Amino acid sequence: MSSENVFEANSLGPATSNSSMPTPDSFDQDFIDEANAILKNAAELSRVLVGAHQSAAALVVQGDWSTIRKYFSLSEKYAAWAHYNVPATGYGSHSWMLTQPGIVRLTQTELEAHPQWRNFGRESARHPPMRGWLAGSIRGKDGTSWGLLQLSDKYEGDFDHRDEAAFARLLALTSSALEGHWLTRNVKQARRS
Image (cartoon, rainbow, N blue to C red; front, side, top):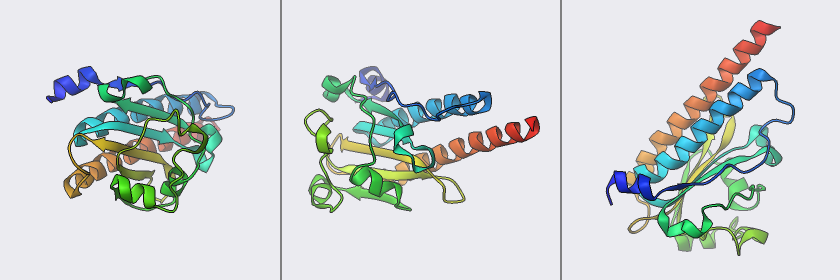
């Protein structure tokens, strides 16, 4: 499948409906807008770069799952889930992944055997099924966890070390972009004070 065809067949789902910050000021809103653009691009680019049918990128502000913003990118194989946008709640493997410093690469068998696997809890009948997992927490240089980037259902076979290396580069770029926009927000707020 050519990259042009991948983009044409792609379904970039809407963000989950949660507010990223309870009472954002104009500087917060600028950051939220930039973060949303970064997450949309990270979801789409990671899926196409590695060659997977599913990708999701999520921003979890200060570990507060009630503020999660999550974007899905799905190939035409998952067209039935194109409008799935139920917010994640920090349950099972998603919550565990945010505490991990590196990338996790699991086959479907390894994923289902993992002690944190909960099969999406109450959402198991509605959530797109997973077929293996390549995931990493989005972290700032100081270790701050910004959220999560993940892939599932590689086009052919299981995720391998080459996929992990490409994914790691995009994860680092996503982390740097979010951190840069956050620092810009802080500088603007400090100048206003």
